[in-house]
Length: 434
Image (cartoon, rainbow, N blue to C red; front, side):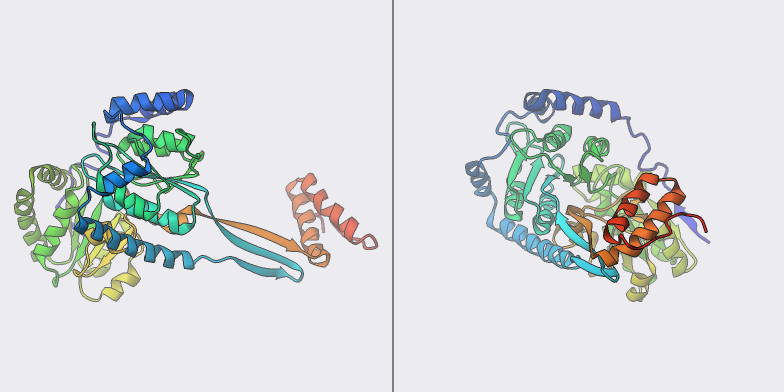
């Protein structure tokens, strides 16, 4: 039976403001007003009046500002993400199968034409998000990729983001943030092609814009505050567990972190260590982590590992770490998570930055029904069929009868006409009655 040693006082949705009307209004304004209106919002919210689409010269100038060591780290991360995306793409293939003699059905994978990749650049410069979103779109085969990131007032996009987007394969880099950036990609402003899909994390305004636009364009997911859960048994190192919890709590004041364990001493020691580790962070990180731990964190004591696994699956965390014995058992047993980190030799930050798996992941229990961003998100799986006349015969007969049973006479007659044309000397029973 589970016991809460620490219970959250708030949830990720607590105190959330209703931003729908504001975002809808901005989208309507920009769609009606085009480039000019988008620029007005950029001036208002981004406090930036520089180039919107970076020229080759501006890209090269930004790249020149990135230290060599950081460039090497970005290339390392890009190479890992690219290799993993290429392996993912290899799992999809065009197929065809003869469903009945003469009737062949097939599957074909086609990348979308234009992808819009949003890269956060507010409180933190999400260099890795540029790598995660643009690289996967490039590997998928998208013909045109826009990387969009909020510029800093009177400065522009962080040079490291520009470099990451450039080497990852962005065709255009746009200095525009928030709803106006999402709108510009969707509506095809500033000479850009209209995006077929929007991907990448963002604040509540970006998330709401994607929610409103979904259907008109594809999206990766509607993301809320990031969340993380650690499963730890008696073999776990409390200091490592506590450090990992704090590392994820710094994302934001409302970023839930959860510890699930079957060992009371581990739980108590982690609870003792976390406040000390938080206090040792720089102030901007400390404020977020303090609020997240105080208001949203939970520590749950379970009776055994099966109960731990069941608890984890019910939370369906974005990030799930296992620091316990018998990692193969956990890999086989666990079913609901965005990305899984097995053993203390790996950690969520590895996946966030450089190990190759994508860090754009489902939050708020969305892992119960979807995974994270992958090369597959940029690809349409479409079907086709071809038939001989003999192969069409049994399909047409069944179609006519089923359609009439449904009351869809027009559908039935599209089968009838083919049978009459292909087999004029044969008689068919095409009624739905015995």
